[in-house]
Image 1 (cartoon, rainbow, N blue to C red):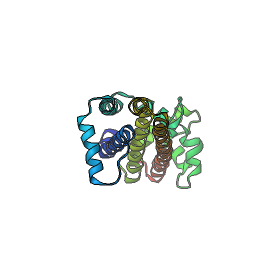
Image 2: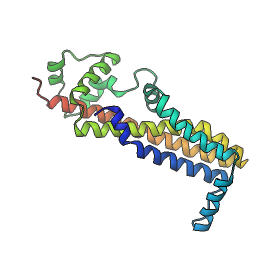
Image 3: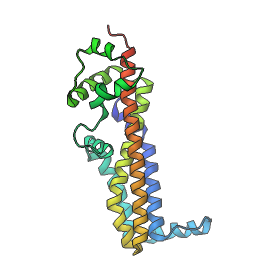
Image 4: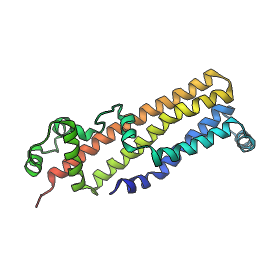
Length: 218
């Protein structure tokens, strides 16, 4: 299944993430309401009537989402969530580290089918991609790939929102503690989603190699 199709399936998750960040953003700007209908109605009214910095922040939130998903290169997103600039994807360690640690993967079979397995990270990544295309569409592979893409995009958005929205929270609230708390929440979110993306990406590589190991090459 193509990456575009997998990202389309994740669209509702990303919209939900944007909504949660938006609610959190306005809550920190205006104060979180008590859990009753009148308080939430009051917050909604203030949001609708306000033309100040917070409403500007929501516009920035929406534009950032469009910019991120439309123009930010996938490689840069991979680098952000893997905390690595060169060869960030785990496919670059498919045959030197990940494959040997998965009992389902038969490296001897893969070497028989694809030749001597490379050692250099860039070469490993290229061979892994070719192998992936040969098993693309299987349930285990697509599920791990889809989960990775969702976690990667959420982590990247949290990273960007940290630098874009935290100053706006301080501008509106005029309270450094509130802004710092908001920033910490985004940092924790970024770290959690990054670690999830890293886990899913390794699982993706493992599933691809396992599927290829079990596949009969004509």
